[in-house]
Image (cartoon, rainbow, N blue to C red; front, side):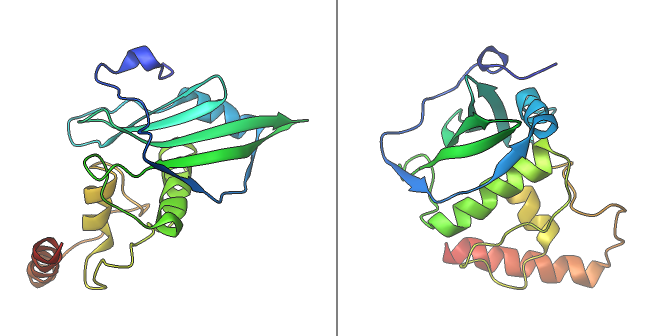
Length: 173
């Protein structure tokens, strides 16, 4: 079932406080069809609701309904090109302020959640290197969205080390 605006109940429009992202990318017709499917969260821990309407891709946080990204597409022959991309800059709705990070994160969300491509999660500049990628992935994207093809076995000392770095990150934020 494809995601539509009616598939989720608490959607908010993109804030007037926004920034324009410098994105250039083309999508094939088959990729565009996958964008049309969108993403409806399966469980409470999934953090994104994404749908395409009138060649505009909307990416909302699932819990709050806030629109974080809006991506306009233009058809050019057999491809679809990004004509405009915006990110929410209302500090009461979204706290990141780094356009370069948001450009990478939006492309990651599209690749990872909609197109099924496995790529490394972009890390924001203020995230310590000791934070485990899978913990950051859960924080940003939600559960059930591994970047690894096969699960990795984690030792107890690794878990405590990651939790320590994660707590320090949260305290400093």
